[in-house]
Image (cartoon, rainbow, N blue to C red; front, side, top):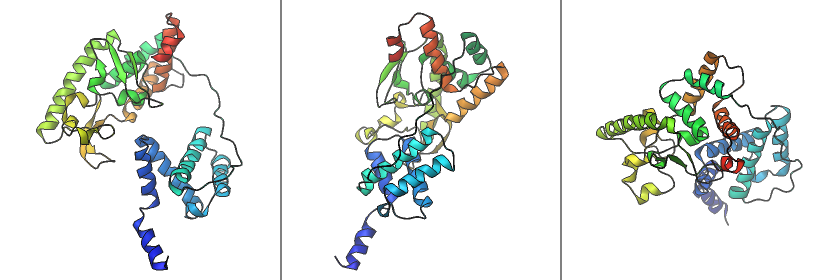
Length: 299
């Protein structure tokens, strides 16, 4: 192949990070995972003075991961995430064997989860109000992860059976969990407000929502259906970073996280807690109330 042909072939190929982005979407990785992978791949390339990954291998990977651990003192989970990103690059994009890596995966320290007593949960909730209070109660009362709560859609709530369906949770699994009796009226009233907000969005030419996988192409009108809307929509319409479409996303993590931090201080709770603490407390309190461990695992 002539030099001109080689240059033409290179020009035809998408940029490296665009190839990574496409591969991540093809494998249905979450937006957050994709963002993290792209960040670490950039860091890896910049660390080696912008050398192309094709020119590097296990030596450079070892050096970079060691640098993160020794010089930047990153957590074990962060070190492993960086390694996952680089292995994804070589396995799916570069198509190059990277040899035997001279290190083992960093071991995460085993720590006991922080759990609130029932009295502390009550004190915490007394300092919350509005949507923050409802979200915190739902995380605690249904044992949801924060992302699972934020990504709930209207059709995931079944008031008749008093249950919530969590789709595409950790490990790409679906599960059903309980919808607490004490939240029924509050959640129904909240959904009525969401319905009015959705109607206002439709009236001004918006009202669509991001749909999973290719459902938007298969059912073009589904994105405007109320059943597909987020249970906890964001206060403002913004541009979708993946599609570029202006629409209303779900609430951001920072809102409830900040509310929990402030409520903790006001309640005088000294334990180091976050949203996930409510999920641990949910499991512990069910165990204390006599539920069997297998049922709690499934919930």
